[in-house]
Image 1: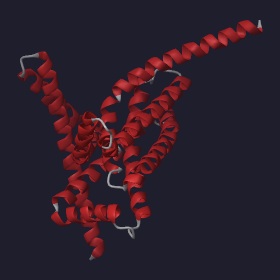
Image 2 (image 1 turned 180 degrees about the vertical axis):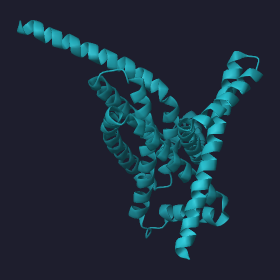
Image 3 (image 1 turned 90 degrees about the vertical axis):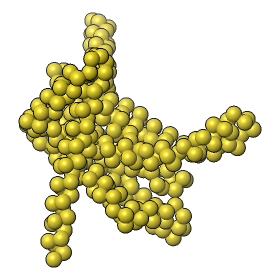
Image 4 (image 1 turned 180 degrees about the horizontal axis):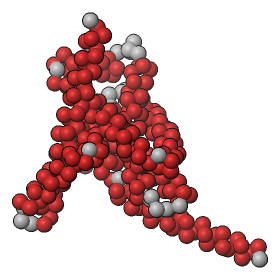
Length: 309
């Protein structure tokens, strides 16, 4: 009798894990777009620290990401069970914050003195032995963790929507699984990206000419890759933040969907039409995010001037 009960329990557990694995796979596919934005943003955020401190900074941000998800998973389950209508407004606040940060970065980049200041800070961090490296790293880590919090919230909400019809235990396991997998994947890739130049330098010191040539290419490509990720990371703030805001405003959401459908009808080939429609949707989301972020930065600057006067 006890043996039969044990077999029944094992069968139930196996069925539960099988269901969770299926739901996790679907959720991973649904969150793939956010994952790409997460990678670009965090690779950008941890760039600029000294070479010997890159991996510790990535590790610290990764641990912070796990803490974010440890807060977000039970909070999402609780809100979904008690006040599900609150999820959308909270996500919109997070989306507005991403748009604000993106607009702030863009404005500083466009202002010549802002760019010089940013370059000076990064140069001091890399070359000046008296520079307060602890404070610089702390600022980098906190900024990356703040950004990760918003993106992690979106990943968890998307996953929660995928497993909405499952039991509470299945939802909890699926959310925890996605959280761990996404964190390991993203920050493993970020660690690889920030150490790409070190790998290239190592290859240039080998005895094989082919590996030396590959190493030189990696060393030359690493700075350009980081600049590219910086641009993509800022653009991702507008795309992700704008998409969150658009989904929370039905009028704008339907208008963008209508524009994407109209773009799809222009192309004759089905494959081209779907790509064109997707590009139009992403572009309009980014424009919406840029507009919202610019307004928020303007409001913030207005308040700062009022406080100063």
